[in-house]
Each structure stands twice: as C-alpha cells, then as structure tokens.
Image (tube, rainbow, N blue to C red; front, side, top):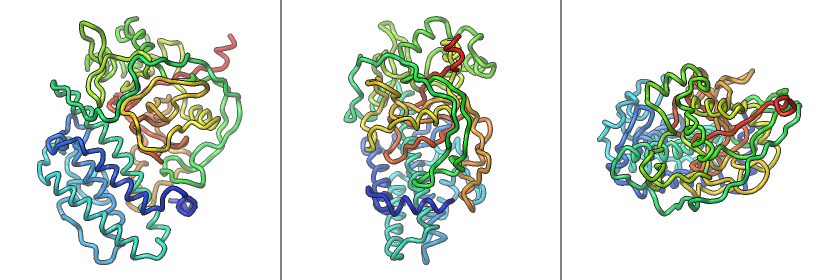
Length: 431
C-alpha cells in the first residue's frame, strides 16, 4: 500500500479514521434492523452468503489483520472463527466451504453481534493506545473499512436474492421508499469524447484498492457514450423482438448459458397475465418502464448492445468520460433501494443507480503491485475470467465512490445491481 493514504486521513473534514470506522460498523447493523435471525441464516445460492456470515467476516478481517498482530495482549474471540469466517485467504489458513455457509446455524446471530462489539471495543482500545496511529496501521484500518462497505452492498444483494425465492414475497424494507412509479425519463443523448491522452487510475489522494493503481497515461480514440442507462422499456423491446431467441446477438458462452438456465428476461422479472413485474427489496412491483434495467449479466448486456447496433464501453472510455463533470451525486448513505429514472441533462447515472458492464476483462494495469503481506490476496488473485464493471449503484455505501473504482464479476452473474450503458465508435457516427 502507498503512503498517499495518510494525505487523505489528515485532510478529511468529514470523519477521523476512527469516526469513519464507527459509522461504518453502525451502518452494517442498521442494515439488519428489519431482519430476524432466520432471515440472517439464509444462503440462497453458492455465490451468496448469509447476512450472519457477512457481519462476522468483516469483523474477522479487523481481528486477523489488525488486532491480533498489532494490539499487545489481544486474545482471539473464538478460535473456530478463524476458519469459519475466512473467505479466501490461503495465507491465513483453512476456510469453511463457501457453498455451505448457510449450514452454520451456530454461532447464533447474537453471538456474532457480540463478536462485532468485541472487535469494536478493541479497536477503540487501539485508538487510545497511540497518540497518533502509525501509517501502516491506518492503512490496514482504512482497508478494513472499505472492505466492510463492500460487504454492506453484498448483504443487500444476498438478502434480495434469498427473499426473491420465497413465494410469500417478503419485503426487506418499505421505509426506504423507491422512486415514484411511472416516473418520466430523460431522452437518451449521445455525448462526444475526443481523442486524447489522459491519466487513468487512482489519484495520490484518497483511498483506493490496489487494482486501481498505478496511475498511468492512456491513449483513447474518439467515441460517444450514452447519456443515461438503458431503461426497462428499451430492454423489453429487445425481449419482444425475440432477442433471447436469436443467437446472432449472443457470444457463444452467453447463448449456452441462457439456454442451459432457461433465461428469457433479467433476473427478478416475472411475466403475469397483466404484464411484467420486478422483484425489489420492497417486494414485487409492476415493471416501471422508465427505470434502468438492472440485474443483467454480461452476456445479456453484450447481446442487448449487439441488438441495438452499439457496444459496451471499455473501462478506459468509462473512466475518461467520468472525469468530464461531477458524476457522484449524494454523499450520504443510499436513500433508495432500487435504481431511479434518469432526470436532467448531460452524463447521468454514472455512479448512483446501477453498476455498468464494460467490454474490458479484469486484468492488472502495467506496473500493478498487490497490497503487501497476506492482504495481497485481496484483489490480484481474481484477475482472470472476470469482467470489469464501473460506476456504482443505489446500494453502494457513502464515501465508496470514485471514478477509478474497478468492480468485477464473472460474466454469468447478475445478482449484483448491474445495468447497461451503451457506447459507439466515433467513425460509426460519421458514416
């Protein structure tokens, strides 16, 4: 990790690092206030994890990487937890099988909450142990904070998938209301970007993950980017034009995946006698045609782009475009549980509604160096067979958005809040 971390810690007018830690930890527990212990036990598929596991794993991260090696006299809360809540850190040791996490009825939710509070109290002890926290510890603490922010979004993704399989149509929350139904939407416009050289990657101030570095020059050819995300209405036109039945639009692996899994619409869409419905964290709702399509996998996004005679942007193009104006919107915690319709002019919905698939494979930048020590397993080991998504979503926590952020998923996955933004080459427009 780089010393530029310290610059942000000293200049932040919003939180000290320990205040940010407390706020982050409290927000995780706020997210479960409407869930019962049975809800927190659910694991609906191997890719997802129980809410309990997310709460415990984020605490495990602070315990293993920060408290155990750096706080004199610290005692591990429970030796079994070192295996149960280790996600993929082979350098730490053995891990419990991911697909079986839903079988962990013990420890109870209450014991996991006690574990969280145990870790929180010792982090507070750590803060009082130093007049000024050493740089190497502040870096680990900040990494753990942003790791937990990632799991806050995962927690919402995972519980949504679990609830979607329950015929009782459980509601996660009706208090955080979705945007009004049948809202208007801004017309799609094409925004031009000229050929040029720009600096890509994380800046030397602010937090960033190792996969966003080093900052480097990139040459980019002129292109055009859609001003907003693809809407449900536009995606429905693809479906009604037999888009899922025409192999011409699909990558070979995507066509096979769609046929083997009987995909004929985005995840959470259901067709009933009176029209299409979409399952949301506020339960099933009639499909709002003006809201962005979400929960599409890479294969679907790429097929839609081919049908529309456009393409997906590269991650280089997306980051280049994101630097053109203020794209980040609110800095508070998510106010909505579902993407809202585009409103306004210019480049819209870059980070506020749904992650956007790019046409770029998840690979290291030239000169990439992973985090030091065991934390080096954080990102680098996944740089194969995955696709980059850019931006952010309505579920992304505050202070976790930046133009250099590189999210990544396998092309068949869609339970994350993933959407579509189209691009086209400049020469296409001129011909």
